[in-house]
Image (cartoon, rainbow, N blue to C red; front, side, top):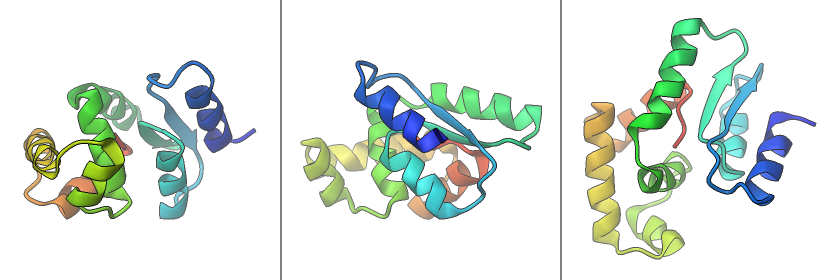
Length: 124
């Protein structure tokens, strides 16, 4: 069983709020997106430094659960309107969450936020 399947099972079987960090040797963006789609909260390469591992775990604690839910579709390229529909919240609420996410990640745009979380292995 790979990390994506394990994540799918964890999230589907009585543990939907458990934060899962996928530990893998795969470097591809497609693998990161697949992990996020099944509910991964973070993504670490097996050859990551201890500093990166600690940073990833700490990063999971930075964003609220709702911010994590908003950020996952951002990584996949969804618009604020689409995210609002998906999460059953107003588009303005999504915008407020994005402002908070950008501030917490010290990012000036959505693209920079996505770049930072992908590089750091933090997907929330």
